[in-house]
Amino acid sequence: MAGITEHAPQAAAEPPHLAATGLGTRERAALAAELRAILPAESVLVEEEQLRPYECDGLSAYRRLPAAVVLPSTEAEVCRILATCNRLGVPVVARGAGTGLSGGALPHPGGVLLSLARFMRILELDPIARTARVQPGVRNLAVSEAAAPYGLYYAPDPSSQIACTIGGNIAENSGGVHCLKYGLTVHNVLRVRLCTIEGEVLEIGSEALDSPGYDLLALVTGSEGLLGVVTEATLKLLPNPRTARCVLAAFDSVTAAGDAVAAVIGAGIIPAGLEMMDKAATAAVEPFVNAGYPLDAEAILLCEVDGTEAEVGAEIDRVDAIMRGSGSQHIRISRDEAERLRFWSGRKAAFPAVGRISPDYYCMDGTIPRKRLAEVLAGIARLEKKYALRCANVFHAGDGNLHPLILYDANQPGELERCEAFGAEILELCIAAGGTITGEHGVGIEKIDQMCVQFPAEVLAAFHAVKHAFDPAERLNPGKAIPSLHRCAEFGRMHVHRGAERFPELPRF
Figure: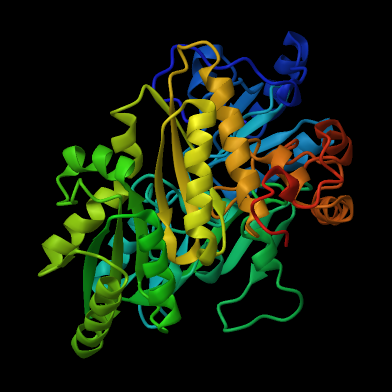
């Protein structure tokens, strides 16, 4: 595992499960020659200074150089590259914008990193069908910008939407602050074109409401580059809501805020967004963006309602009453669009804001049942004391997706290791509470040990069987997301029942 390192002078020593033997000079030259038979010479990068920008993704504490980086411009080139690497026995890692947070785009030292940065075209936007056909290198926010003149937008909105790309969103099944009502990427992608490791093109899904056969589109979405390389996607667009308003409610305890979340959902209200930030997070964010957050609150909730004026007015009144009934003494309701966006600006800027108060931070990603929110946060507070590290909590409260930000300094001996152990225990705490180790950031290399905690051997074997159906020799993104049974045996957790014995105060599931 690793952490987000904003400006640590050195990357951490590579852990044993990342160790691999790279290609020798002669093998690298032969590989480059094969690739240059497919691409122009300037699109095949092999010099160290050319490779450095690709040595990691957003999970930057671990870094390694690929044998080569290729920058194709067409689907045919992608297919030829994959087929060539498969023939040569060379691993391939696909990369979008490199904003991922689980090490999913970490290069293989003996392999090719396939960059899709040149696939930046919106191929078709159909305002009647409300669809957009795009290449994988198109930025998430660019889709909504292109659809705006037609009164449409693309719903999934991860905090990195200004930079992250659709291909990466599909690989990780990304969400965002509005996923509670409008769904994750999997709910907003209709069709993809996919290049297999053999160089074949598959079309999966349909622009119709349903497609025949197995739901392979859901299988591919979130598959972290293990099954194929997406070269095109058809996205569902939604009409902009007529109006939207946001309630900012402050609470004097995290427990009260968690109870308010449960009360909102329990009342049958499905907000467009329902987010929580604890006191440490708001203290970092407020000086950064001046969103108007009360700094004396132990937790704040942002609850957005959208729809027609009448619908929004009625639901805002209900949300206001629920927040007050749950103990909030400080409630503000956005008066106009500018104030609504200001409320959200703090939540959207939480990660960079925390980067201003700590040399380094490690962004975790786990999901729990909403009703377990307060006790899991109490568990995280205990772990802060155990590891003597601060933690700011930012999360999608409506669907229980936690993003604890563990603050550390990689320049201090032992802090990264303590941070890693802290993060591992948070994930296992999520499992013990009946949750899962990732909500939207993926497994990558970061959480691969905790896969051994969450899933028994027979389930992992089924995952490998699916992988082998698409990629029999495991050339695509090898060593990521799905641990081998041998690895789990070494980790010593194959016989753990969902990690529950680590946290005896939580009931088993």
